[in-house]
Length: 263
Figure 1 (spheres, rainbow, N blue to C red):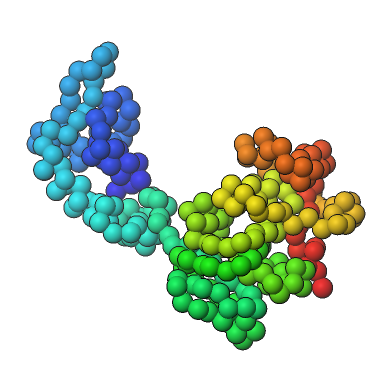
Figure 2: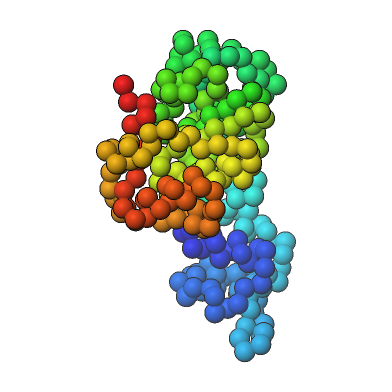
């Protein structure tokens, strides 16, 4: 089955659906016609149009589970999407957040003491899925290269954190700490990440070097493609956000954080 069919049948499982909203390709399919002929699906008038609804719930559940067994019973993966729908992106994939950590002290990870200094010096980093972390000072670093060198800029007192992919509010709730600093690219995306983190940790600060203006003047680069401001970036009244937002908006240039950790 295709993604479109899955969405239609999933919606019918939960709600009545206006007939006009069901694509013709689904209505004309043999499967849909068979469900109507078997009186598993039925149609009735509603206002100026009609709605399609599930008439035989038990039979429909059997049909749905046979065709979409992963959808409600197990975590959906790209592999199961390919096996069931021939498309890895057909359904939303539930993935566990992967975090990389570096540091030079002992931290609490999932209620266990972890000598982060040992892993950092021996293996370069410590990684974990879906962590619960307690530590005194955290620095969230946007890009991997900067994450691997951040202590050269900010010292050894922080636990440095880099997430595979954008960090969300749910992931941020896994951290318990006293101080947060955010080290990101100086562009709209970086500002959005900073404000997202700050919405969870109100005391979080954006790392802004003393020579930022000089660095931006000498080392900023043109933005390729279109990078749009999120609503929280465009509406922010924080001085540090306004400063960077206006520079990026007026010049269409941005400053990569890697320049700060350049050897």
